[in-house]
Image 1: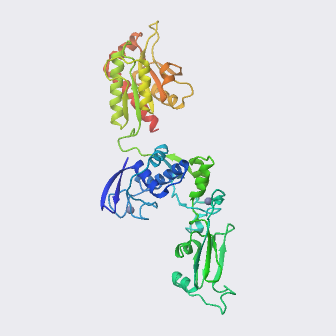
Image 2 (image 1 turned 45 degrees about the vertical axis):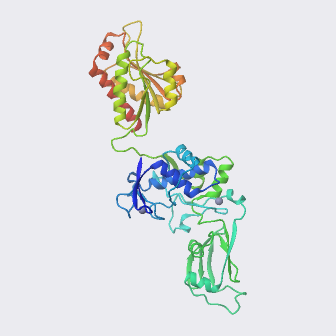
Image 3 (image 1 turned 60 degrees about the horizontal axis):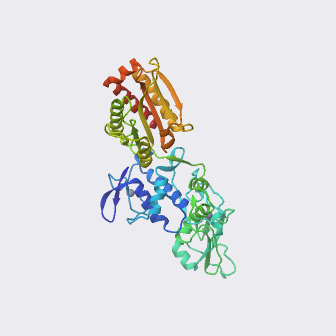
Length: 449
Ligand SMILES: [Zn+2]
Ligand SMILES: [Zn+2]
């Protein structure tokens, strides 16, 4: 999938591959020193933020640059920094491993707030943003506590405070004795994070003060010699604590566990990014039509070639184990699939039996392969319906191909060449096409239920 990105430096619209953009934005925002699971978690956060701009998730693209999905201007389309540059492999790998995964709440992508270091507990959204966001709940974070240098200080004179905050402070005779009348209505949560505070004649939210005074955190206190603001942690405390996340990764937690810890009640889901008319975009199939020397060989190839065309038209990538009537060894057919790593390996051949009375369609898959079982059940129902063959059911087997192919693999034995009626159907190209269309429809049904 490609996005149209407005590049404000180049003043031009650029086409960017979605997952490359995820890797690139992750590398710019995360910098070095994070463990792989933290990087993976971050790619999911970036992808989630990008997904929010997309139409299918209720986004409308960039409102500043018409026709663009997003722009690279700070704090406009996405909350992450964005700049061009080479991207190291580790970020690409992380994006690839989490490909398509986003964080959702109630089926919609969340706003993946994060901060550098919470200092002991993250924050409820209402204390920072003023509104309640269900997935932004306070969680205790002992993880980042172990990291030294959490406390930092900043000093301001009364005059400086008055100027920066645009407030008037009534000075007592002796400033060293009392801050009464200067700092009042102090609301601090049990973690020491300042929710709000009156300075002079104005009430400030902790978050506001953090930004105006450029403090590192909303956990601070002060002393009335000049004013010394001591902070714990870094940032507003909303959502994911990066330092804590990295500590979790270092003790073996997965990116799923990390995200689930900091974002309350969320789910990790696959993005639905099928393009119009391309429902199988991004899917890959290896189609197999036997070794090339068995009976019914030419019809097998014909069926597989036609099926490949239909799947490709829907955006799928298709690889064939053979494209003409040449012979391919069993081990080579498995090897082709293992190189290609498809979503499904589908082998279509015909059956034989000593007794001509036996007829019908059957499908085999490896025991325990639930996805193969699911798609097989769809295919056999659609096919036997379309060509009026006997539905002999979906079965498990340990055939060489099912064993050796490392993808989900199914073996469709379409009809019995040894049965006169089945053989007649096979010889009929219109009937074969019906079978092909039925398999195609079943595959579509599997992906778009
Ligand atoms: Zn924008
Ligand atoms: Zn933390």
